[in-house]
Length: 276
Image (cartoon, rainbow, N blue to C red; front, side):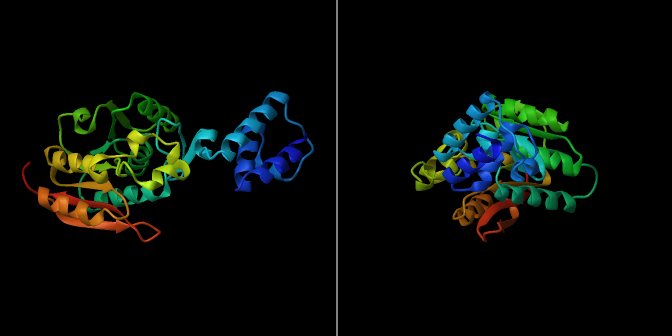
């Protein structure tokens, strides 16, 4: 089969023809323009075999990002693997909220702590935009290896630390704490759909109806925040009211929630003004 024939074969088997093109470009090692133009060529047998296998896996539902080993976030190409969540556009709202808070605080570069960094997407975006050092933690060693690859790739000023939530945090206070923690309830039907079927459950699922890890972070954050510092959390579309109530009960003020592009409540946070 020529490259053009392979492309036609794959596009007929996948729901999204663009996925076939992306996989073919990855296997061919050539630019998309040449492939789409139908330049006469043949893939070496080992590349053609790899392409067929990837198409079969994509047809079974495996996420394109895992097959390609990469996903863009905040205009940054990032390495991803099944050890980490696939960075999503909804999470870019967490970055936007963090940047807005940093802009409101005067003086110097903010000190930022990210909990549960996964691929390092949020920490990398903040380190680049604010030109500051970001401390990023994760309890999973495999996830930290992916984050370290991305740190090297983008030469980011990011410190990686292994541990569960605040157990890995250094003994100092921060201007901003951000997190996209697990917030899906254990029996949520969405776990059986789409990309979620293949993503690490430890990064998705939380006990207590999806609130266990959010509660831990809210409870522990004041001991790691400076006065006037903020905590920002991504959460599920129906969790905003409860997260706001939890923040208020812990003593946070100026509590707000931002909606994503679909109109769903997605990021909530508050400012810490009291003593821990």
